[in-house]
Image (tube, one colour):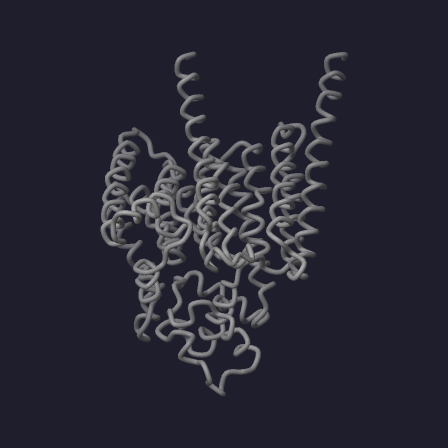
Length: 437
């Protein structure tokens, strides 16, 4: 009897620790939502203080989140609360959503968002005023859309629900993110799921900013889940839908398709054909925009930026691409040696990819973080925090010394240097564990 009482009293503070942390996060996200509606008052300092507060509160909740202090229902309620707050806010430091809304409009009007760059419609009197207002704010208007057909259907759905309104996308992607949390609860320990469900990066990039990467990421995770459950036709079909959202999903394709019968490879191809075929038939796809992206864009990179001090862009891409393929092949070979199929180390695959990539936007980590839940490591969660420093660009810093979309060197060093330190700590802890066992 005394033991039970002591155990109960011991867990009560932990429950309050989780709920108190959730309340702190809710207040901080509410303040962030208010500032997003009054951007003239928002500075990077305020932005980082509020997100830093959420990060600290999340870590405190994680520390107190045992099986009695937090239940799946409680986790989901707090996660939904944070995302609802984000939906009431406006996108922060981002304007990509104008492209999504424009693509949804063009998809509805012509049956395809591909083939014509937005700039081709400048001065077109046939464009309704509210869509012309969107057009005026689309970034890189001379570049055709880079978003795959799976995402285009979500843009079309948003257009059908409430055209030109970003809140529809915020709701759609927040609901998709809640589905991701439910899936992760089936796959991993609830404490690590909490880190994802409360992650400032996830809430900022999805609920506030309406980035669509969560669609491709959840389809990828469902593909791996169904592959593990040996529901092969579903796994392959969902994988193709994920690739149709973003080419990132191709990194997981060999792990799903290897050793499957030829008919599953055909099914994968047929689903992709069904996605792309109607658009290609009309004369366009996301390939034109992706080629421009791959050839010209460069942002927040690490090793790529370092090597560019001495080599031209093409040489650096060839070297880093070759290194990535070699390491990827080694990881794939190691995975295939197992007697039974298991979910691959996507954290390492995506982490390595982001390490060598010329462009590392904060929302790209949406593809990595589900694996960070399944394979917890200090470096991956550290990266999810430090990547938010990439918003410290010239235009947001109001700097006359730093170009509009340039990140100061000290920010890049802090962002990636912290991740490197975290990775070294992971290796040290693993070595200590190996010695003890």
